Amino acid sequence: MNLFDLSGRVAVITGGNGGIGLGIAQALAGQGCNVSIWGRNADKNKAAAASMAGLTGKVDTRVCDVTDPASVNAAMNATLDSFGRVDGCFANAGIGGGGRRSFIERTEAEWRAMFATNLDGVFHAFQAAAKHMTDRANAGDPFGRLVATSSLASIFGTARNEHYAATKAAINALVRALGVELARHGVTANAILPGWIKSDMTSSIMANEKFVANVMPRIPVRRFGEASDFGGIAVYLMSKASSYHTADTFVIDGGYTAF
Image: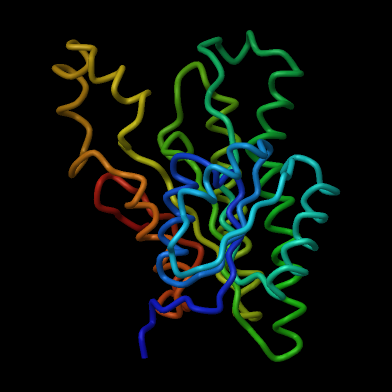
């Protein structure tokens, strides 16, 4: 039996219409998984779905604001109407540091906006998915995968973006707690952390000669990662092979490590 054959499985990817999320969606659909992409931008959703034409898994999209529980529940219900089940939820929505102001300079509104976008989105999506998965487990079909993308900032912190690091650390803590709570239902929870991934942001950093000379030698990285690296981990975590791999964090640095 091929443990990585995802035919018939269904995965939701929030924020799946670009970058890492799209890489995860493409890898899953390439293994026969049916994919529902949830994103705020209908045009980007449509473009993401078009980029996956010809893959073996079916793809649909939902306009969804993951910070709004009503929107998430509506998207979940529509996905269930379309596919009949949801086996995995990859919560990829979020936002970056949002500037270089210090902790004492941050406003209440900035703090709450960061938490809403980074943490609430994971909470709402995971809660809707976990409810469906545990109900299905109680009916005799125990299988579920919850995977959040977080940030290396959750481990190492980040100067002048403390509120960003706090939200990402909270996501990792939530994953660990869910790994314990949901194990009896056959549901696993894990996190994936981007390391050095090829992007416009890292291209600009690498153009800084002082950074390359003074900082890069101190960063343990195997190679610059690709979005497809996240896809490979996503396929594994969605498969039967990962049934006992839960509450772990995978750090993608061009290869990957788990802790």
